[in-house]
Length: 258
Image 1 (cartoon, one colour):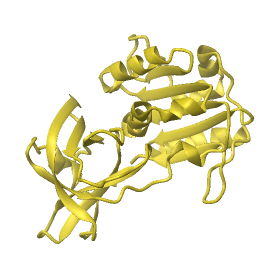
Image 2 (cartoon, rainbow, N blue to C red; image 1 turned 180 degrees about the horizontal axis):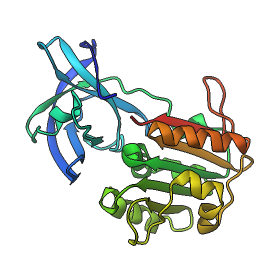
Image 3 (cartoon, rainbow, N blue to C red; image 1 turned 135 degrees about the horizontal axis):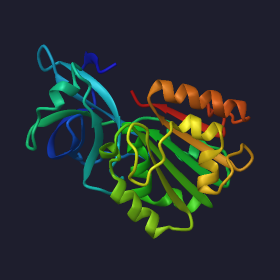
Image 4 (cartoon, one colour; image 1 turned 120 degrees about the vertical axis):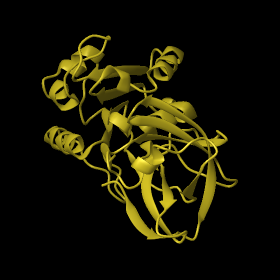
């Protein structure tokens, strides 16, 4: 679903687009000026909106924040949905244009929701990579885990956004961070080529990483499309991983990025 239309929230501001980077015709990173006093944790999301039928009614959609809390901008990774009421309009905006921003960041997709463990596995499809980039930029998450494995699955090679940045983070922490790109519809490029649930189920991914995935030592974060998260929830549940809930720190944490 591309939008939600509702009255303007009480804590709302209009912010200027400072830059737009198009990774492909349907995928971009958009940066906004960060308003004074806006705070968030890595893994939180913020709602962006555009007015419709007058200034008091806005089309909203939530996007995970890519930029680190200390940065002077708010960065979002956006997939343009064909015919989408919001994203089709976002696609024609330019630096200097304005967007509505709900100035209260929200969400529970933060590593502190997980119970203590040894290794952190971070799985994403498409634009679900966004919150992990924020975590890597902010840096504190690396101090909490012996090993971190970031697995990003896309259809085409050019959709491996932020890959150069992730490789730099990996070079800075070669003993603790491992990046595994997977490209399911193209060969080559140094990536794996099967869907994440498949290479987890048959053990190919764990063998490639050199690290077991088990509920005793591993903690898992999953951010992606609904079909992917449903497959991962089922696969991990069969391996005794427990979901995080309010008041309960589990061993797997999910965010539907759709």
